[in-house]
Length: 234
Image 1 (cartoon, rainbow, N blue to C red):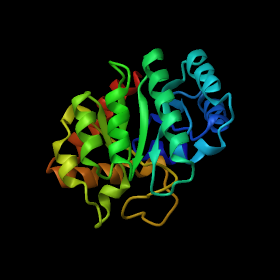
Image 2: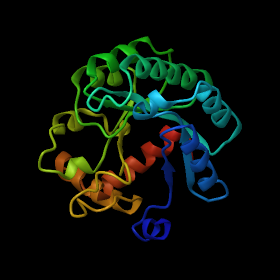
Image 3: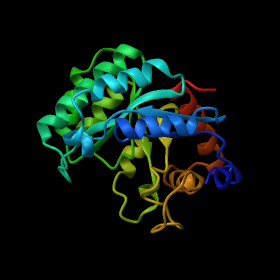
Image 4: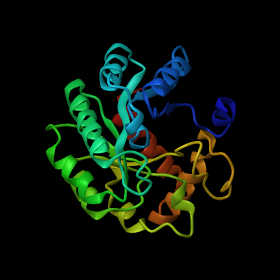
């Protein structure tokens, strides 16, 4: 997978954690590997099963390892509701507080929870940086993210005919636009239906370039610069 990514021109990548055990495995994967980093956090789908010491373990991973470059993935998902909403809200707030305390950006998942995500962003510590990842819409959260100077990231969904967030995509300032794969899900056209992987971010770049009317090389360069700035990596 790493070799295929390199062949596609992807030389740097961040493995996103979904729970504390996953974060530890992600850290093990990237340690000693050039151009690879990870995050630490608890996805809202995993919030209901999170152990009582989850946030202390996230803190330890993020504090003690330079390879951990962001907090998350965290946020709210009221579409699947895999965890009680009050538990999701509590953990989301704790992630935002920790990110602000450690000076790390936060990776935010938001689905069918626009009002609650917007409220959490309004209440977060000042100067907390973050990204609305795999963004598919939500005007309130989008407005709060723009006001806070956050980034917005688009995935392979941008290549689908059903993509309904093109107006938001065009509103994101060029220096705060990110692209991603969200592997192993949401493989972009022409790989839709396959297991997604980092190499396919080239197809996401092409889809985004078509939607904003820019050259794909320009989108690739700009989003690479933005990603390095966001994660604080070379």
